[in-house]
Image (cartoon, rainbow, N blue to C red):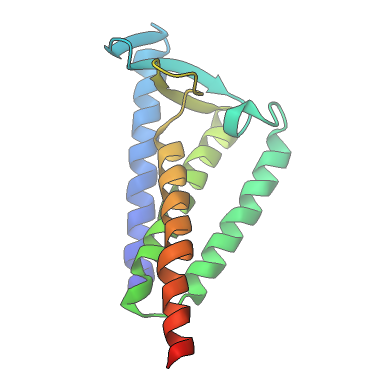
Length: 160
């Protein structure tokens, strides 16, 4: 039952990501840029042919292979996690990273590039999308859990 709910969550998140990218392609691409909050946030259409910060630009097959390996690892860890509720946040983090990875892969396969459109104008930062937000938040959550929560559980077991 847990995996069914998780699959539904992944599909809903991917759907939201793809819907926002559809809006960016149909509404934003023709005009290129919209200021949302002057000096803070713009919607700027960008075709990203690389990965984070434009690395590996134009290396579509290497990127797809890397993402396939990452997705396989994420699914493996998800399926092998203990079925205890203490690991629910780990599951959430893995779901977020998985949804983000798949959302961007869909773009790479069907468009040949990833649609990015959020741009912080108050700092120099790459333009990003909803799938990127999923990945970053999921990785941060996973790091926090690994550094502070799961580690404490291991220490408690040693004391017992």
